[in-house]
Image (cartoon, rainbow, N blue to C red):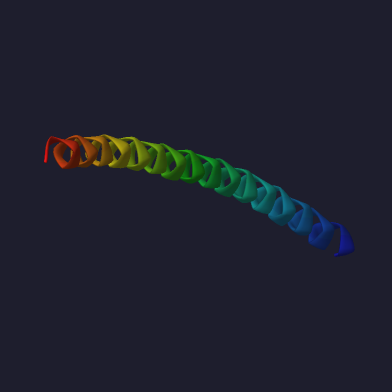
Length: 59
């Protein structure tokens, strides 16, 4: 009986490890995506700011 329980626990632990690895990968992908979007947003913001500054200097 104890052997069966231990086997089930080890299987459960392995699936949990696998799931946590998947969650880890997902978190990394999401973090990369957010960083990329922030970077794009910053670049676009600077571009708009440059346009605005150019417009102000024209006045």
